[in-house]
Image 1 (cartoon, rainbow over the protein chains, first blue to last red):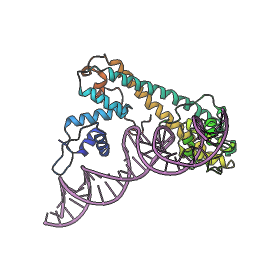
Image 2 (image 1 turned 180 degrees about the vertical axis):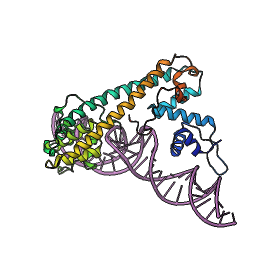
Image 3 (image 1 turned 30 degrees about the vertical axis):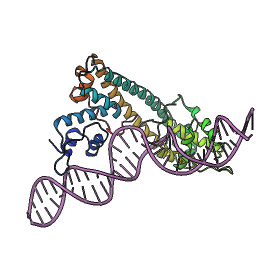
Length: 146
Length: 146
DNA sequence: CTTGATCCTCTAGTCGCTAGAGGATGTAGG
DNA sequence: CCTACATCCTCTAGCGACTAGAGGATCAAG
């Protein structure tokens, strides 16, 4: 049994993040010392590693909840895990396509800028007039992502 | 001069989003009717179009603020617009690389899953053990983006 | 004169954390 | 034993870029 700081070091998560995951119900509230400090078993550390790995692969916490649920019940069919992974893969692919269109457009805009005053700047001009663009980049205007 | 709903239709922005941009200082508070309704000129509509376009290209509101500032002062050199655009392009490229690594890993995981019970599921197993992965996908664990 | 669309302000929620206040407890050295 | 200093605790608030909803006023058309 180990304190939260050590778990943070072992998993690569930050201490507040581990507490946050507990609050979100992704891990059970662990036992505590007499003074109230959390104590984790290796089993919980592995569970947190699972969460971290799934996050690094871009899964949302809601999906991770479902995946953990499945990992907790190994007798169930894994159809749902498959479905979640495939949907996630599709959204990753879609996002790559979007970003490639942006990359293309940005490259073009930057290349066209000769570096004079803003009045002649192709970047400013392009932003003001969508007709100057090669493509539609009408992508989810909310949730454009970092 | 037109009401906010019409501006929304013309720009493709939603009504609350326009009010939000006003609150954030990206557009000036417009004149109002006697009953307090906002009235926009074509000039403001163009400004909102600029913002929408820049958002669709993935620029953050902070950057858009700087770009608008430059558009308002056409005599200034456009060095800053260039810098912003190049930095943004770099982050787009970096993100594409990250997402490609994810795509690769997800494809591999999904392909390995034979579809039996969760105990034998490669997806669940891979998530629990990073050593099964081809690459490091140790990317910004926060801000993985939508 | 009523109906339904549009507008107003304000608050709170989304997601996945991160930062900070303000305090208690633990450990190591002198 | 005392003092640092690290680590831990809870709680609240903030990030970015909106979105949703409450609760109400106003407008245009029939």
